[in-house]
Length: 133
Image (cartoon, rainbow, N blue to C red; front, side):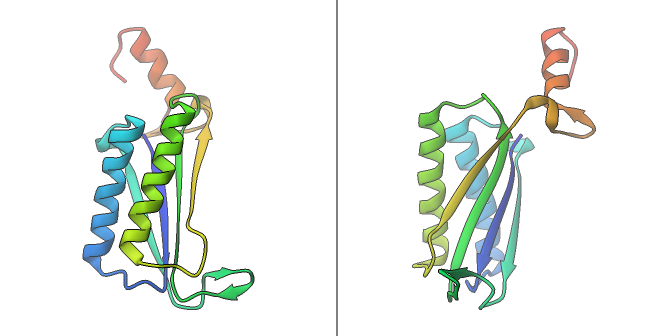
């Protein structure tokens, strides 16, 4: 159940580019981190030129990705593989950047987040008890 935020700055973020990033990020989550594609939400924000900086200086093109996942559901190797693949995906989408391409995985405790009004912990408890989450 990942929640993903991608920021693009200065890049030509045509609707096709944004949709491609959303689709491919969802596929990475499914393939590398074993997350359900149907529960993966990807939001892309496009910032105008001059609003992204490195070393205190505006850069023409920049990008970052932040994803929230449930703590303890992936190995260190899976997370490293995802970070590398996501960086490669972002770089392919925007081209060379004047700033580092950051990818952050935020691991949240299962009792601290969820969707549709239930925490991940509550869903897991129901599944263990044989109920439908």
